[in-house]
Image (cartoon, rainbow, N blue to C red; front, top):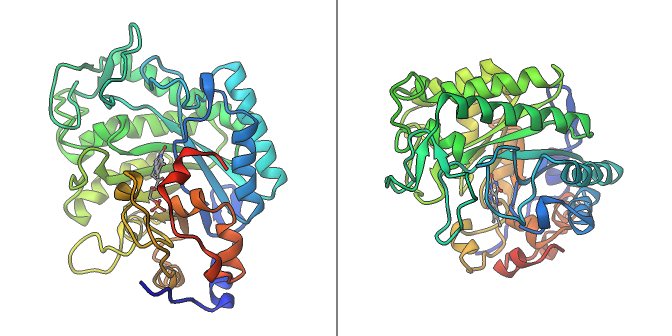
Length: 375
Ligand SMILES: Cc1cc2nc3c(=O)[nH]c(=O)nc-3n(C[C@H](O)[C@H](O)[C@H](O)COP(=O)(O)O)c2cc1C
Protein backbone atom coordinates (compact mmCIF):
# COMPACT_ATOMS: atom_id res chain seq x y z
CA UNK A 1 0.00 0.00 0.00
CA UNK A 2 1.28 3.46 -0.86
CA UNK A 3 1.81 5.77 2.06
CA UNK A 4 -0.01 9.03 1.45
CA UNK A 5 1.68 11.60 3.57
CA UNK A 6 -0.24 14.45 5.12
CA UNK A 7 1.68 17.70 5.07
CA UNK A 8 3.91 18.07 8.10
CA UNK A 9 2.11 21.16 9.21
CA UNK A 10 -1.34 19.55 8.99
CA UNK A 11 -0.43 16.50 11.10
CA UNK A 12 1.48 18.62 13.61
CA UNK A 13 -1.22 21.28 13.77
CA UNK A 14 -4.08 18.84 14.38
CA UNK A 15 -2.27 16.39 16.66
CA UNK A 16 -0.49 19.03 18.74
CA UNK A 17 -3.61 20.66 20.12
CA UNK A 18 -3.94 20.17 23.89
CA UNK A 19 -7.15 18.61 25.18
CA UNK A 20 -8.77 18.50 28.59
CA UNK A 21 -10.17 15.47 30.40
CA UNK A 22 -11.76 16.72 33.60
CA UNK A 23 -8.88 18.31 35.57
CA UNK A 24 -6.12 17.04 33.28
CA UNK A 25 -4.72 18.86 30.29
CA UNK A 26 -3.13 16.41 27.87
CA UNK A 27 -0.47 18.28 25.87
CA UNK A 28 -1.45 16.69 22.53
CA UNK A 29 -3.78 14.14 20.95
CA UNK A 30 -1.45 11.13 20.90
CA UNK A 31 -2.14 8.38 23.44
CA UNK A 32 -0.10 5.24 24.00
CA UNK A 33 -2.58 2.33 24.01
CA UNK A 34 -2.39 -0.08 26.96
CA UNK A 35 -0.25 -3.09 26.09
CA UNK A 36 0.47 -6.03 28.38
CA UNK A 37 4.20 -6.65 28.32
CA UNK A 38 4.82 -9.16 31.15
CA UNK A 39 8.15 -7.64 32.16
CA UNK A 40 7.39 -7.03 35.85
CA UNK A 41 8.54 -10.00 37.95
CA UNK A 42 6.54 -10.25 41.14
CA UNK A 43 4.18 -7.66 39.69
CA UNK A 44 6.76 -4.89 40.29
CA UNK A 45 7.58 -2.54 37.40
CA UNK A 46 11.32 -1.96 37.42
CA UNK A 47 13.92 0.27 35.83
CA UNK A 48 13.37 -1.18 32.33
CA UNK A 49 9.61 -0.54 32.51
CA UNK A 50 10.29 3.04 33.65
CA UNK A 51 12.54 3.83 30.73
CA UNK A 52 10.20 2.06 28.26
CA UNK A 53 7.39 4.47 29.14
CA UNK A 54 9.59 7.56 29.68
CA UNK A 55 11.19 7.09 26.24
CA UNK A 56 7.78 7.34 24.56
CA UNK A 57 6.79 10.37 26.65
CA UNK A 58 10.06 12.11 25.77
CA UNK A 59 9.33 11.49 22.08
CA UNK A 60 6.01 13.31 22.30
CA UNK A 61 3.27 10.89 23.41
CA UNK A 62 0.78 13.14 25.23
CA UNK A 63 -0.91 10.50 27.41
CA UNK A 64 0.35 7.04 28.31
CA UNK A 65 -2.15 4.39 29.33
CA UNK A 66 -0.07 1.71 31.02
CA UNK A 67 -0.39 -1.97 30.32
CA UNK A 68 -3.24 -3.66 32.20
CA UNK A 69 -2.27 -3.92 35.88
CA UNK A 70 -4.08 -6.17 38.37
CA UNK A 71 -6.20 -4.66 41.12
CA UNK A 72 -5.85 -6.11 44.63
CA UNK A 73 -8.32 -8.97 44.53
CA UNK A 74 -7.20 -12.60 44.79
CA UNK A 75 -8.78 -13.51 41.44
CA UNK A 76 -7.79 -10.36 39.49
CA UNK A 77 -5.11 -12.17 37.50
CA UNK A 78 -2.71 -15.05 37.52
CA UNK A 79 0.53 -14.06 35.88
CA UNK A 80 3.54 -13.28 38.03
CA UNK A 81 5.15 -11.08 35.37
CA UNK A 82 2.16 -8.82 34.74
CA UNK A 83 2.34 -5.77 37.00
CA UNK A 84 0.01 -5.25 39.94
CA UNK A 85 -1.44 -2.02 41.24
CA UNK A 86 -1.39 -2.96 44.91
CA UNK A 87 1.32 -3.80 47.42
CA UNK A 88 4.09 -1.56 48.74
CA UNK A 89 6.87 -2.57 46.38
CA UNK A 90 4.57 -2.60 43.34
CA UNK A 91 3.19 0.88 44.03
CA UNK A 92 6.69 2.23 44.76
CA UNK A 93 7.71 0.94 41.31
CA UNK A 94 4.72 2.60 39.72
CA UNK A 95 5.40 5.91 41.52
CA UNK A 96 8.82 5.99 39.87
CA UNK A 97 7.27 5.25 36.45
CA UNK A 98 4.92 8.23 36.85
CA UNK A 99 7.78 10.45 38.02
CA UNK A 100 9.92 9.60 34.99
CA UNK A 101 7.05 10.10 32.53
CA UNK A 102 6.31 13.51 34.06
CA UNK A 103 9.98 14.48 33.91
CA UNK A 104 9.86 13.62 30.20
CA UNK A 105 6.87 15.94 29.67
CA UNK A 106 4.11 13.34 29.42
CA UNK A 107 1.02 12.38 31.38
CA UNK A 108 0.17 8.84 32.51
CA UNK A 109 -2.74 6.77 33.81
CA UNK A 110 -2.62 3.12 34.92
CA UNK A 111 -5.04 0.68 33.31
CA UNK A 112 -6.79 -1.15 36.17
CA UNK A 113 -7.66 -4.74 35.34
CA UNK A 114 -9.48 -7.84 36.57
CA UNK A 115 -9.50 -10.75 34.13
CA UNK A 116 -12.66 -12.46 35.44
CA UNK A 117 -13.28 -15.81 33.74
CA UNK A 118 -10.49 -15.52 31.18
CA UNK A 119 -7.86 -18.21 31.53
CA UNK A 120 -5.30 -19.17 28.97
CA UNK A 121 -5.12 -22.90 28.46
CA UNK A 122 -2.62 -24.33 30.82
CA UNK A 123 -2.67 -21.41 33.27
CA UNK A 124 -2.40 -22.88 36.74
CA UNK A 125 -5.25 -21.85 39.02
CA UNK A 126 -4.16 -19.59 41.86
CA UNK A 127 -4.66 -21.51 45.11
CA UNK A 128 -8.02 -20.72 46.71
CA UNK A 129 -8.85 -18.25 43.93
CA UNK A 130 -11.02 -19.86 41.30
CA UNK A 131 -11.96 -17.91 38.19
CA UNK A 132 -14.95 -15.72 38.96
CA UNK A 133 -17.34 -13.89 36.69
CA UNK A 134 -20.94 -12.73 36.51
CA UNK A 135 -22.26 -16.24 35.87
CA UNK A 136 -19.24 -18.54 35.94
CA UNK A 137 -19.40 -18.73 32.14
CA UNK A 138 -16.30 -18.48 29.97
CA UNK A 139 -16.20 -16.43 26.78
CA UNK A 140 -16.72 -19.56 24.71
CA UNK A 141 -19.96 -20.24 26.61
CA UNK A 142 -18.65 -23.18 28.64
CA UNK A 143 -19.26 -23.56 32.35
CA UNK A 144 -17.49 -25.40 35.13
CA UNK A 145 -14.10 -23.67 35.16
CA UNK A 146 -15.12 -21.03 37.68
CA UNK A 147 -18.06 -19.69 39.61
CA UNK A 148 -20.62 -16.90 39.59
CA UNK A 149 -19.72 -13.97 41.82
CA UNK A 150 -21.53 -13.61 45.12
CA UNK A 151 -22.62 -10.28 46.58
CA UNK A 152 -19.48 -10.38 48.73
CA UNK A 153 -17.35 -10.89 45.59
CA UNK A 154 -19.00 -7.91 43.89
CA UNK A 155 -18.28 -5.69 46.88
CA UNK A 156 -14.69 -6.92 47.18
CA UNK A 157 -13.93 -6.27 43.51
CA UNK A 158 -15.53 -2.82 43.63
CA UNK A 159 -13.41 -2.09 46.71
CA UNK A 160 -10.25 -3.29 44.96
CA UNK A 161 -10.80 -0.96 41.97
CA UNK A 162 -11.60 1.98 44.28
CA UNK A 163 -8.46 1.34 46.34
CA UNK A 164 -6.30 1.13 43.23
CA UNK A 165 -7.73 4.40 41.92
CA UNK A 166 -7.06 6.13 45.24
CA UNK A 167 -3.51 4.75 45.17
CA UNK A 168 -3.03 6.07 41.63
CA UNK A 169 -3.88 9.58 42.75
CA UNK A 170 -1.80 9.29 45.91
CA UNK A 171 1.37 8.18 44.09
CA UNK A 172 1.20 10.85 41.41
CA UNK A 173 -0.68 9.44 38.39
CA UNK A 174 -2.82 11.78 36.30
CA UNK A 175 -5.98 9.66 36.28
CA UNK A 176 -7.03 6.04 35.84
CA UNK A 177 -8.35 3.91 33.03
CA UNK A 178 -10.74 1.09 33.95
CA UNK A 179 -10.36 -1.95 31.67
CA UNK A 180 -13.90 -2.72 30.58
CA UNK A 181 -12.94 -4.16 27.19
CA UNK A 182 -11.99 -7.34 25.33
CA UNK A 183 -13.96 -9.87 27.37
CA UNK A 184 -12.39 -9.33 30.79
CA UNK A 185 -14.39 -9.03 34.02
CA UNK A 186 -16.25 -5.75 33.49
CA UNK A 187 -16.99 -6.65 29.88
CA UNK A 188 -18.26 -10.06 31.04
CA UNK A 189 -20.94 -8.18 32.96
CA UNK A 190 -21.76 -5.88 30.03
CA UNK A 191 -22.04 -8.72 27.49
CA UNK A 192 -25.14 -10.94 27.38
CA UNK A 193 -23.00 -13.92 26.28
CA UNK A 194 -21.33 -14.15 29.72
CA UNK A 195 -23.91 -12.49 31.97
CA UNK A 196 -27.00 -14.59 32.77
CA UNK A 197 -27.67 -13.13 36.21
CA UNK A 198 -31.21 -12.75 37.47
CA UNK A 199 -30.48 -10.60 40.54
CA UNK A 200 -30.72 -7.18 38.89
CA UNK A 201 -27.14 -7.33 37.54
CA UNK A 202 -28.14 -9.16 34.36
CA UNK A 203 -30.89 -8.88 31.78
CA UNK A 204 -31.27 -5.84 29.54
CA UNK A 205 -28.33 -3.56 28.68
CA UNK A 206 -29.03 -1.23 31.62
CA UNK A 207 -29.14 -4.12 34.11
CA UNK A 208 -25.94 -5.60 32.65
CA UNK A 209 -24.27 -2.21 33.20
CA UNK A 210 -25.35 -1.95 36.85
CA UNK A 211 -22.25 -3.61 38.37
CA UNK A 212 -19.84 -1.55 36.30
CA UNK A 213 -21.74 1.66 37.01
CA UNK A 214 -21.55 0.92 40.76
CA UNK A 215 -17.84 0.26 40.37
CA UNK A 216 -17.33 3.54 38.49
CA UNK A 217 -19.25 5.42 41.20
CA UNK A 218 -17.03 3.86 43.90
CA UNK A 219 -13.89 4.80 41.96
CA UNK A 220 -15.23 8.33 41.49
CA UNK A 221 -15.89 8.61 45.25
CA UNK A 222 -12.36 7.39 46.07
CA UNK A 223 -10.56 10.14 44.12
CA UNK A 224 -10.79 13.94 43.87
CA UNK A 225 -13.58 15.33 41.75
CA UNK A 226 -11.13 16.63 39.11
CA UNK A 227 -9.15 13.35 38.84
CA UNK A 228 -9.91 11.82 35.43
CA UNK A 229 -11.63 8.45 35.22
CA UNK A 230 -11.40 6.90 31.75
CA UNK A 231 -13.41 3.84 30.78
CA UNK A 232 -12.19 1.49 28.03
CA UNK A 233 -14.69 -0.78 26.34
CA UNK A 234 -15.07 -2.73 23.11
CA UNK A 235 -17.62 -4.63 21.11
CA UNK A 236 -15.16 -7.47 20.36
CA UNK A 237 -13.90 -10.04 22.85
CA UNK A 238 -10.47 -11.67 23.03
CA UNK A 239 -11.87 -15.06 22.03
CA UNK A 240 -14.73 -13.81 19.89
CA UNK A 241 -13.97 -11.02 17.43
CA UNK A 242 -17.53 -10.87 16.07
CA UNK A 243 -19.20 -10.40 19.46
CA UNK A 244 -21.12 -7.17 19.97
CA UNK A 245 -22.33 -5.43 23.12
CA UNK A 246 -24.71 -3.21 21.19
CA UNK A 247 -26.36 -3.77 17.82
CA UNK A 248 -27.78 -0.24 17.62
CA UNK A 249 -26.88 3.26 18.81
CA UNK A 250 -29.85 3.02 21.21
CA UNK A 251 -28.41 -0.09 22.86
CA UNK A 252 -25.02 1.56 23.07
CA UNK A 253 -26.56 4.62 24.68
CA UNK A 254 -28.29 2.42 27.28
CA UNK A 255 -24.87 1.10 28.33
CA UNK A 256 -22.83 4.30 28.14
CA UNK A 257 -25.27 6.71 29.81
CA UNK A 258 -25.22 5.08 33.28
CA UNK A 259 -21.42 4.91 33.11
CA UNK A 260 -21.14 8.59 32.21
CA UNK A 261 -23.60 9.47 34.96
CA UNK A 262 -21.61 7.39 37.47
CA UNK A 263 -18.53 9.50 36.79
CA UNK A 264 -16.68 8.46 33.63
CA UNK A 265 -14.87 11.54 32.28
CA UNK A 266 -13.73 10.05 28.96
CA UNK A 267 -14.31 6.86 27.02
CA UNK A 268 -11.72 4.79 25.18
CA UNK A 269 -13.57 2.90 22.44
CA UNK A 270 -11.43 -0.06 21.45
CA UNK A 271 -11.74 -1.15 17.83
CA UNK A 272 -9.36 -3.08 15.64
CA UNK A 273 -9.59 -0.62 12.70
CA UNK A 274 -10.53 2.98 13.45
CA UNK A 275 -11.88 3.69 9.94
CA UNK A 276 -14.68 1.07 10.09
CA UNK A 277 -18.17 2.60 10.60
CA UNK A 278 -19.86 1.15 13.70
CA UNK A 279 -23.52 1.19 12.66
CA UNK A 280 -25.25 1.32 9.27
CA UNK A 281 -26.15 4.70 7.86
CA UNK A 282 -23.27 6.70 9.35
CA UNK A 283 -19.53 7.01 8.86
CA UNK A 284 -18.94 7.40 12.62
CA UNK A 285 -16.67 4.83 14.25
CA UNK A 286 -17.25 3.50 17.77
CA UNK A 287 -15.41 6.42 19.40
CA UNK A 288 -17.43 8.82 17.24
CA UNK A 289 -20.71 7.30 18.40
CA UNK A 290 -19.47 7.32 21.99
CA UNK A 291 -18.71 11.03 21.90
CA UNK A 292 -22.01 11.80 20.18
CA UNK A 293 -24.07 9.76 22.67
CA UNK A 294 -22.34 10.81 25.90
CA UNK A 295 -20.88 14.23 25.18
CA UNK A 296 -17.66 13.01 26.85
CA UNK A 297 -14.20 13.16 25.22
CA UNK A 298 -13.48 9.96 23.31
CA UNK A 299 -10.27 8.13 22.42
CA UNK A 300 -10.16 6.13 19.20
CA UNK A 301 -7.76 3.25 18.49
CA UNK A 302 -7.15 0.49 15.99
CA UNK A 303 -4.40 0.10 13.39
CA UNK A 304 -3.45 3.78 13.47
CA UNK A 305 -0.49 4.15 11.13
CA UNK A 306 -0.64 0.48 10.21
CA UNK A 307 -2.33 -1.39 7.43
CA UNK A 308 -3.35 -4.58 9.15
CA UNK A 309 -5.21 -6.36 11.84
CA UNK A 310 -3.59 -6.37 15.28
CA UNK A 311 -4.79 -9.85 16.16
CA UNK A 312 -3.13 -11.39 13.11
CA UNK A 313 -0.10 -9.24 13.75
CA UNK A 314 0.02 -10.37 17.36
CA UNK A 315 0.01 -13.97 16.08
CA UNK A 316 3.20 -13.24 14.20
CA UNK A 317 2.30 -11.40 10.99
CA UNK A 318 3.77 -7.99 10.32
CA UNK A 319 1.81 -4.91 9.30
CA UNK A 320 2.98 -2.30 6.79
CA UNK A 321 2.77 1.43 7.39
CA UNK A 322 -0.40 3.30 6.38
CA UNK A 323 -1.06 7.02 6.01
CA UNK A 324 -3.03 8.97 8.63
CA UNK A 325 -4.98 11.41 6.45
CA UNK A 326 -8.33 9.76 7.18
CA UNK A 327 -7.54 9.94 10.89
CA UNK A 328 -6.69 13.64 10.70
CA UNK A 329 -9.93 14.32 8.78
CA UNK A 330 -11.95 12.66 11.54
CA UNK A 331 -10.08 14.52 14.30
CA UNK A 332 -10.64 17.79 12.48
CA UNK A 333 -14.38 17.06 12.33
CA UNK A 334 -14.27 16.45 16.14
CA UNK A 335 -15.55 12.90 15.64
CA UNK A 336 -13.29 11.98 18.59
CA UNK A 337 -10.69 13.79 20.68
CA UNK A 338 -7.65 11.58 21.11
CA UNK A 339 -5.94 8.82 19.17
CA UNK A 340 -4.40 5.79 20.83
CA UNK A 341 -1.54 4.02 19.12
CA UNK A 342 -0.53 0.49 20.05
CA UNK A 343 1.71 -1.60 17.86
CA UNK A 344 3.25 1.30 15.96
CA UNK A 345 4.50 2.68 19.30
CA UNK A 346 5.64 -0.72 20.45
CA UNK A 347 7.70 -1.01 17.30
CA UNK A 348 9.06 2.51 17.38
CA UNK A 349 9.46 4.63 20.54
CA UNK A 350 10.01 7.63 18.25
CA UNK A 351 6.67 7.25 16.41
CA UNK A 352 5.10 10.40 17.87
CA UNK A 353 8.19 12.55 17.23
CA UNK A 354 8.34 11.34 13.62
CA UNK A 355 4.65 11.99 12.96
CA UNK A 356 4.69 15.39 14.66
CA UNK A 357 7.71 16.48 12.63
CA UNK A 358 6.53 14.99 9.34
CA UNK A 359 9.21 12.30 9.06
CA UNK A 360 6.67 9.85 7.63
CA UNK A 361 9.16 8.01 5.46
CA UNK A 362 11.10 7.08 8.62
CA UNK A 363 8.12 5.21 10.09
CA UNK A 364 8.75 1.49 10.54
CA UNK A 365 6.44 -1.37 9.55
CA UNK A 366 5.31 -3.43 12.55
CA UNK A 367 7.25 -6.59 13.23
CA UNK A 368 5.60 -8.92 15.78
CA UNK A 369 9.05 -9.53 17.29
CA UNK A 370 8.59 -6.11 18.99
CA UNK A 371 6.36 -7.85 21.57
CA UNK A 372 9.30 -9.85 22.85
CA UNK A 373 11.44 -6.99 24.14
CA UNK A 374 10.99 -3.82 26.12
CA UNK A 375 13.02 -1.33 24.09
C1 LIG B 1 1.06 -6.82 22.82
C2 LIG B 1 -0.30 -6.23 23.06
C3 LIG B 1 -0.80 -6.19 24.36
C4 LIG B 1 -2.05 -5.61 24.62
N1 LIG B 1 -2.49 -5.51 25.93
C5 LIG B 1 -3.61 -4.80 26.22
C6 LIG B 1 -3.98 -4.50 27.56
O1 LIG B 1 -3.29 -4.84 28.54
N2 LIG B 1 -5.13 -3.81 27.75
C7 LIG B 1 -5.92 -3.41 26.73
O2 LIG B 1 -6.97 -2.79 26.96
N3 LIG B 1 -5.57 -3.65 25.44
C8 LIG B 1 -4.44 -4.30 25.15
N4 LIG B 1 -4.04 -4.47 23.84
C9 LIG B 1 -4.81 -3.84 22.76
C10 LIG B 1 -4.20 -2.46 22.43
O3 LIG B 1 -4.38 -1.54 23.49
C11 LIG B 1 -4.81 -1.84 21.17
O4 LIG B 1 -6.18 -1.61 21.39
C12 LIG B 1 -4.62 -2.74 19.96
O5 LIG B 1 -3.27 -3.15 19.84
C13 LIG B 1 -5.03 -2.01 18.67
O6 LIG B 1 -4.22 -0.88 18.46
P1 LIG B 1 -3.05 -0.91 17.34
O7 LIG B 1 -3.69 -1.37 16.09
O8 LIG B 1 -2.56 0.52 17.29
O9 LIG B 1 -2.00 -1.88 17.80
C14 LIG B 1 -2.82 -5.08 23.56
C15 LIG B 1 -2.31 -5.16 22.26
C16 LIG B 1 -1.08 -5.71 22.00
C17 LIG B 1 -0.55 -5.73 20.58
